[in-house]
Image 1 (cartoon, rainbow, N blue to C red):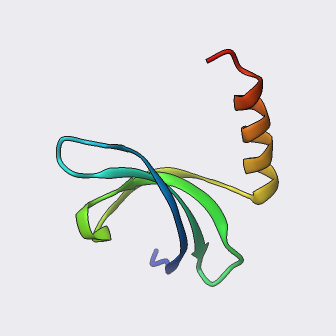
Image 2: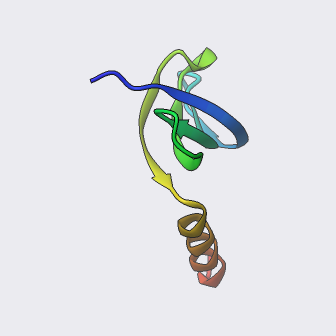
Length: 72
């Protein structure tokens, strides 16, 4: 099944692998829908992507609250 995506925002890099792939937080529009926040790995030049997790704005806010409440 083919899908389309558009990167709306590149919010930041969380880590980089030895092969150059970066795990990033981005805002992405999937198949022309409203943008959602996405955490996944991207190959150099964005030519490939790994599996990831997509969060709505409300889910991202809830995640932020959970992380802020943790003793890290």
